[in-house]
Image 1: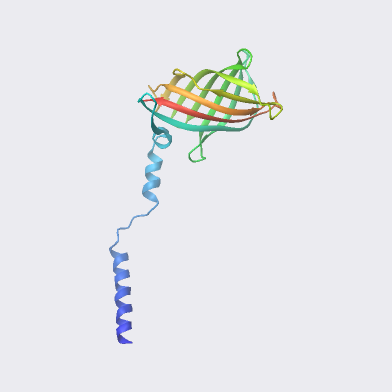
Image 2: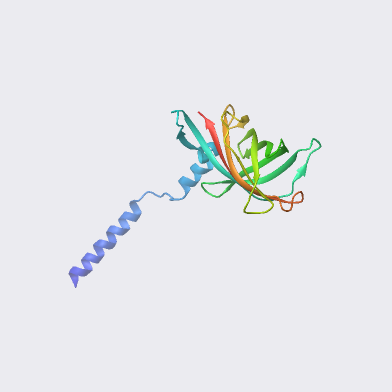
Length: 190
């Protein structure tokens, strides 16, 4: 019994010494503090290599939800949506589409990706086609062959690149409401 009591006392002393001699660091504070200081570019961009060997960074985002289309005096339509990170699902900014029909099945689209610490503006023609499986819906897409980012500010200042899009839009209640679920891959040249 004395032997067991001695072993328990030694084990307890070892645990107490371990706790007392351990550095006092919160497991959550350091990563949280570092995450708070990261720019949106550092936090959401992924490093990649193109088929030609050139390096680029990409940021996959999603615009999803309902909006009330706004018409401008020059026959354009403005659509505003939350911008979601495809990596985390968090809202990381706002996506604003400035859209105008540009011939059958095509739209002239200026899209602003408004992050908390910078902005990217993309301009391209986007293809659209009726979705044969959903009456009143369209399927949209574009894979530009050249740079389509026309403006970059904040942490993105000086950056160039292009944006790929694939998505679907519900026009059954247009012009009073539009639902969008578009996936964007922002590709920034290094």
